[in-house]
Amino acid sequence: MEQKEINDCKTLLESIRGDIRLIRSELEHMRELNESRLKAIEKICEDHEARLRDVSTGVTQFRFWSSVTSGGSTAMSLLALVKSFVGSRF
Image 1 (cartoon, rainbow, N blue to C red):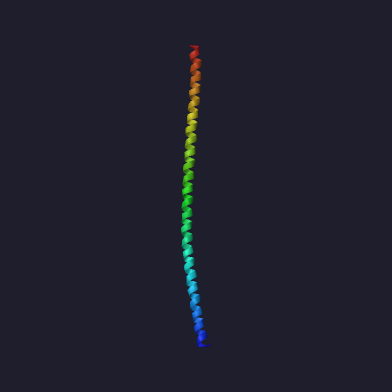
Image 2 (image 1 turned 90 degrees about the horizontal axis):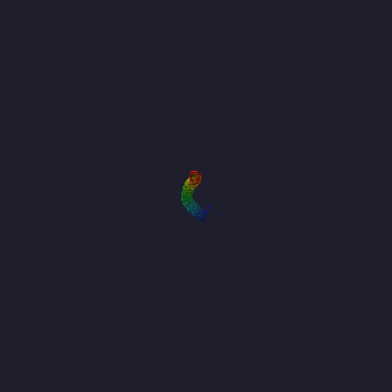
């Protein structure tokens, strides 16, 4: 092999090594971006889960107080009915 061919092969080899370093660097950058995105998505999911739990708790409390209020109205209506019935007898 001639010296020129050897030099050409060395140059080509260095070029390939540089390309491989660049690809590895880009892959590492992409891995870091993907990890960052995954963490952001996980945080968003946790926030949504917390919001859903809060809404569910609020709905449960609303139903409870609505039932209590409705039950109170029913009790007051029955009491008024009994009072009117008893009041008219005496």
